[in-house]
Image 1 (cartoon, helix red, strand yellow):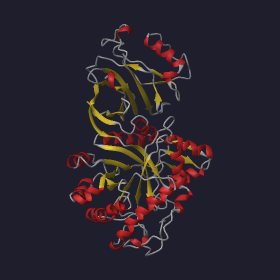
Image 2: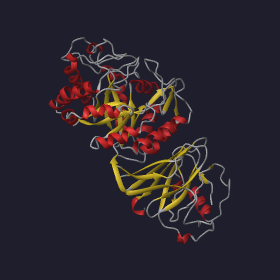
Image 3: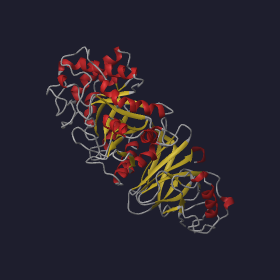
Image 4: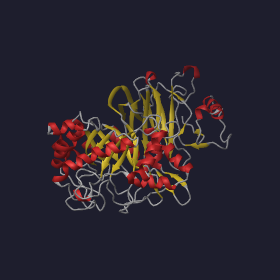
Amino acid sequence: MSFLLPVLPGKNIVNDKISSNLMRAFISGRFFINQHPRLVYLAAAVSLSGVLAADGEATSLSSSPPASFRTILTVKDTAARLTEQPVLPLGRTADGSIATIFIDPARQFQTIEGFGGAFTEAAAVTWRKMGPTNQQAIINAYFDSATGHGYTLCRTHINSCDFSTSNYAYDEVAGDTELKHFSIARDQQALLPMIRAALAASKTPFKLFATPWSPPAWMKTNGEMNHGGKLKPEYRQAWADYFVRYIQEYKKQGVSLWGLTTQNEPEANSPWDNCLYSPVEQRDFIRDYLGPTLQRARLQNVKIMAWDHNRDDMVEYADVIYADPVASSFIWGTAYHWYSDGAFQNMALHHDAWPEKPLLATEACQDNGPHIGEWNPGERYGSAIISDLNRWSLGWVDWNLVLDEQGGPNHANNFCGAPIIADTKNDKLLFQSSYYYLGHFARYIRPGAKRILCSASQNNIEATACINPDGTVAVVVLNRSDDAVRYNLKSRHTATPVSLPAHSIATYLLKEPEL
């Protein structure tokens, strides 16, 4: 038997007196529709096994197990956005006619590093254009663990990227291999203030890694930062020194680096900032220059990630680099982006071949404009995160934290979407579907969590699950279809039939000892 659950937008229903009374009335069969007109009724039908028998006959509440679980829900075309539902009892009887999401917390896999987004000059310039209230609102939405996502793993760029207002490098004096003219003054205008504001809002400082799009133009074979080109062999040591100097200068500004990727998208010859590397060239640069230079500077704890391009060629690239034991010894793991057409199978192949080398998703966005108000970007995010976690990724890092109403600024007009779009003309924030979908993971799967066994018996639902260090099990289930889907939320000792509305995502929070 199914019922409509009452949802009070923006409230914690568990602690809301009115909703608690309604929930008690709902369970005891005394539920009055529209008694409280402020309630929004979602088609989140939940069959309460243990409260209702399989044939629909009510059983005594005293027979219900004391264990319960929380549900966080986001649904298209409703007010539900990371909205907490009434607490429900865990059941003991599965409905054999519907699908099953099965979890086993005893079967554990990779440890999660975290979730986050990227500090770019575009994001920082947009952030600075907002009034003080909305500047803080952006920071809190991402970095306050009580009211926002509590991001714990973020990215930024070394020199300019396409999401900068122009090309720039920290040392633009040709031939300055001693880096006497190295300066991060450009980053001090907007980028570093935004990073420091985020650090101030974070109860636990997030981990930050940095990526170069291009060396200075004078170090490259084509004499410019855009349109491909390669690092000149005679500047390999100077470029390695450049990484060290960057880390040291950021440290002076109160910003520590957790990691580096060697090159953003090393196979992309694009109209904006880039630099091409073959697998052999990246291997040799890490082995002979970057790795040893970091060691000499006593920065060996800064993690080096190889690749940092799409899933499609990651295995072939890794096979060359990791075949060299010296190069491999300097490399923590493999970074990758989501822009290829799926190719999730390559992540599993990578883990099979190099289980000791972590995988980390380091960039994703909806390209070709800001996509304001569209639901599909959120669903793409949700599906990709589930697929990546289930194939050994240790985390997931989005691209720009915030962009303007055009999807920029971007010096190459490569406009994209972001989870928060800033209406800079009217000082308003537009939270997009991707923001809420990201929150279903970032808020409830915390650093140190371990992915656990989680399977879906049908293809129309996607799911992943992790157990947090405090014993909370977070199960994230995605329904991208046009119809509600019923399934058993099942463990070895519990089974609760539930239903997920069309175009929605739910995070279920359970306690490991009760499963």
